[in-house]
Image 1 (cartoon, helix red, strand yellow):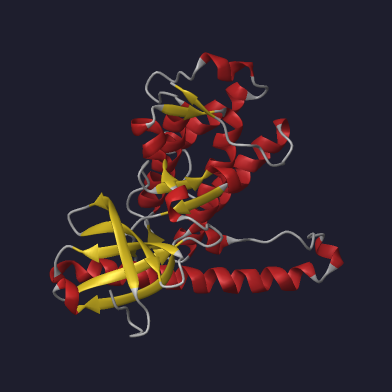
Image 2 (image 1 turned 60 degrees about the vertical axis):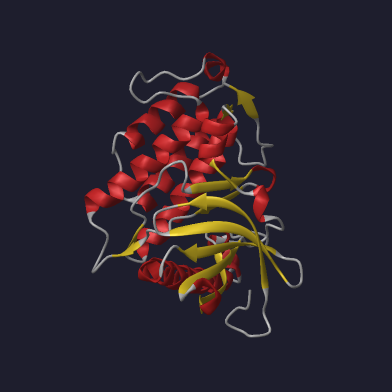
Length: 279
């Protein structure tokens, strides 16, 4: 299939997801890069894909801008920022490789999407796959980096005046080995002014509920798997998650800061190999 650049050709593979507005396929570029091909179901749904591509490009632009500011701050020793520390906001959203109207698909828009620093798109899985397909749950330390990075990304989205609309288990993708977290929300909306407070609260709560489900917890009974309770700080941590899931925070920036204030009381910030267990 020819892309926007007539020299670019994309080779679709198997279907991986369907919605009322589009279908997702694995695909490869001519140089063998694995991507996702998002095809509108009909021309009247082109706007959904067009908006998604626009928002992703805006997020990338803002991520680059913040990274440049961060690099300038690193030059001043007084800021105490190590040279190897990067913000890496751009790793948290799909990359738009191409976006075009396809005559081969009856005038439907196609987005070609990839994930930065992820060689194989098929290595990225939504939390829903672990919970409902593999019937697995993660350990406590794995949930920490997923929750922390998710809050960081929500903060960027809200800062730019975008609403994710839904933040459920199908919208949070992870690559466990490299600790990648990606938000995949084609329904993202641009809000005039700022995102309404209650919408921000809802999105933080939904994201936290998704992580609780991945942990094997139950927000109604407030119960978590017995083996988690042997972890130092477990009660304080799970109580904090339940507070967020109940709508206790509407400011993602403050939520991110308070989250790591709690984490730093009990755990050292270091790489933790992701662990998944049978439920």
